[in-house]
Image 1 (cartoon, rainbow, N blue to C red):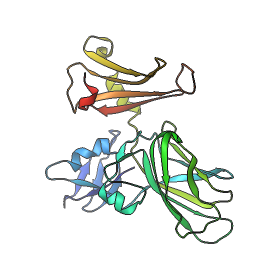
Image 2: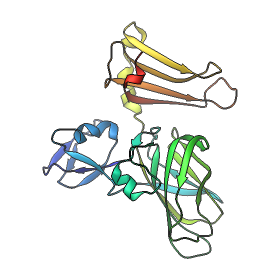
Image 3: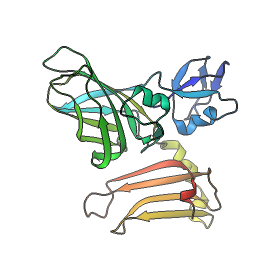
Image 4: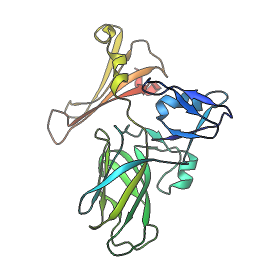
Length: 263
């Protein structure tokens, strides 16, 4: 999850994304974790109150679920390609390019069964699913070099709906593993209620669907008729395996309309 820093030189009281109280109390230069969708309005304010920084990560729990697989689980869903890397991100992480949208990026730490060195490797992930078939993993070289096993792109899988990233290792016995992840949470839960209203079934609501070559719906966007760029909408993405007609996953997200969404 992105890290935001108070750059206002003032004592800020910011609302929480879930609407609960008390507010977030933030002294000058202090940081906190939050989603870009909600807190960007304070980044883009004039003058700016917050800036997104790479001074920290939302560290996740990580467990080895197999002899050569490390699964990291984040707190909730991951927004598909939901975070745009900044110049600061690129300066820190060699697997990241400024201006590119990622589902997640960060740092893996582990020791192996041969050496006593603590190894690290930066990574980034674009998309959703298995590397090479829905997602693209980029994993950097281990530092220091020479571990008996290391994370690799081949065989790695990200499941945005489940909020997990499974890294394939070149061998078994990776020990003391941890994963630090920068990601944007998918806006689920109570925010979806915004769309539960009589207009959903009336003439004042527009639905646009995208289908694949087998006439299966892969993406659906819903918004109030007459909306313009920058207005809120809901996007639903569907994934399928093989020739089946029922989707494997259905992921709903709050969305901000862009020109390409409008007819």
